[in-house]
Image (tube, rainbow, N blue to C red; front, side):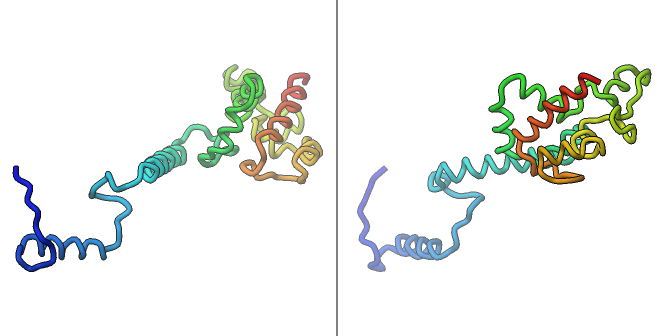
Length: 182
């Protein structure tokens, strides 16, 4: 291997002139954001952001296509990192309450009827109009309209994803105490 200095832009070395022309052509082309190329010129922050976004997109796609988690999807229809961090910052007891109400695994009427294989009624003990599920009590039960208005400041049906985690948790605590004493 031998290094030799070559005077540029003098039309003496055809290979050097061709390399110079191709470099100028390449510099005029729009820069690709992704694809083949010298990855050492792509900032690590761009690579991390791109991979992170790809992971979120894949996660959201899988979450949307899955059939289970029907009740949980009412509270969390999409991947929400901010809401996830809020739930993760709760203490152990509050995380338990939130998870039980979000998933429907909380021994309300509907869940009890599944566990007891139909020996118990799935109907709401408060209004008797629908199966007693988390979503029914949190968002639909007519008996709880006044309580929902007190906590959420709205009357009637609510848009679950818009409700703040801590507000929802306070409401869930009251519901837990109420349903436990029926």
